[in-house]
Length: 288
Image (cartoon, rainbow, N blue to C red; front, side, top):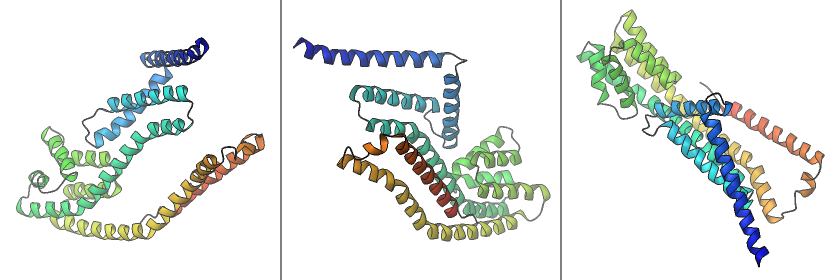
């Protein structure tokens, strides 16, 4: 009876000591300003901050990183306590999901801005016909478009009101958004203002060109959607089959993983898989 009680208590104590040691090590590494871990942490927080600023999120990037670190720490403790190998996959997901989610939200926001761009240029052209002042015409379009375009225009107007020249505010927005389509449209507006000419007519022509480009991109996207879906299925299939075979027959891969030749074959297969995925993505990444 005493041995039965002692064994679980020893396991709980070892897990608690492991968690305490990991927490102390992490605290020491973060507290030291010269620590490589601290530098890596600050770079990661800065990377998240780029997304949060672009998405105009109220949640600070540091708070997101801290919550992510806490979840990973809890999962590591559970892994040490239970020994479930599937928790390794969950830990990896906890490490990459926040970044991939923010990247997806940024990509979706840029796509929405590109979709709204031609309509906004038409609105600005019509506003310039009634109001020759570009600043006043730009302010009038803020309330006429939907987010996220209205949010970006509001930032441009506020920068201009705080003393930033309008051309510089437009270039700042182009750099912040990072879309070639938006950058070309804003650059056209800046160049047209500096060189003179019929600005409303230039904007109308630019809007028509953007609509035609959007139409062509839609056609290309439709034609390549099936191929991209097939690539995703083929990329996931080897891992799904591996998990299925491991679950159906736990010792199925023991001969492969019990020898150096087996590890070499797995490494070659992973390299071939990665090359095939990159190659397929490059083929389907059609740029017009």
